[in-house]
Image (cartoon, rainbow over the protein chains, first blue to last red):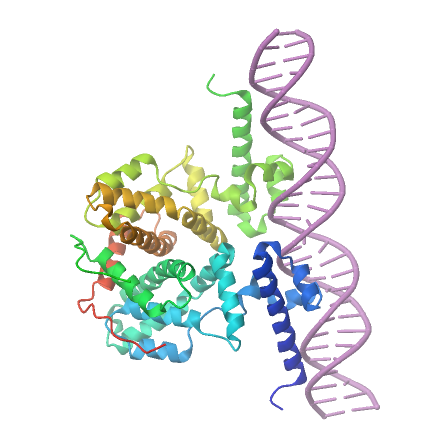
Length: 214
Length: 214
DNA sequence: TGCTTTCATGCATAAACTGCATGAATGCAG
DNA sequence: CTGCATTCATGCAGTTTATGCATGAAAGCA
């Protein structure tokens, strides 16, 4: 008795609705799809749709906020290198790229979010809502690295700034994601982005040495 | 003939609605105020409200996106120091603090936006929509500083990263704005923020440690 | 077999918007 | 100041997202 019949039915219904919604939105554009259209395609009542997802955006964004998994957090806190921002950014992007059971559905979902400003904005907002949890993760890393909380407030401020900076950089990374060839390496993109940040913040003279990318 | 009667009436109506909306939202909270309430308070029809502002959010955010004025842009492009990010951040925050005719109304509006996540999100989104204009401003500064467009693409990438970073830092700055004493100096806040960024990104070992394979 | 919990649905309603028609106010000749 | 064109405020009907409530059916369980 792994699953009750109820749970299985519930999961099936949810998946049906999600697939219908994503397919419709990919075809007509998110804003041109009504909840009624999704309901008809997935053969549920409108009320059931809202019981499951709460909003039209919810069905595309998925139920849970994109938080990193336990192992990703562990890697970040315990095996971090010398570059805090880079490591954190790596963890976040990993969690964004974490795939669900169905890889194709995952891709469709990401495509849809990327091409719909409103959805992108919502996803960003959702991540900001998790700010406190991110801060906690970073503080854990500080502790493990021996940066004790003699001055907890300062450490927390630093952590919050890291989260804020990451939010910004993510905007940049996402833009590069959408209008870059499908197979482009995320790691390369992150590396060049980090370098760019350094060249911006590491001035004063800002001397572009032989930094050739691509 | 400075103003036609029409223009004056129009301006008066707009102001009446804005004041009513902001006052109501400050008192009851933005989400607890309906458009109908605003309309009743300002004695216009609902249709007129939407003719003026297009949306419930619009009446709080104001008509125009918060873009820096010409003089602010000039200061940024011509009298910039060695710190690109700091200068740009300064320009943006200045434009956010630029006051309209009525200073009190301006303050109310800011307070309201700061304490309402949804409005804050919208304002952020609005600013992101102006990304291209910001990039153009930064590129102008590059040009004036002699960084010629031998490699335009790289310069543009750098500019976009600056805008992205600024978007992130703004989140941090705004949070400090809301829960800090009213008289706190914006300049000090910016300075400490910039220092924080440097201490985060200035790690000596700029060594892109090879992380796991994906 | 009966009882409880869960679930899908219908119904009513709120609230944000939009399109369209219309009459009134304003601007502008003549 | 008179007639015409433009602009404007409004009413009205309709769409869409979203919520609360009641109800009967299905699933779990004793």
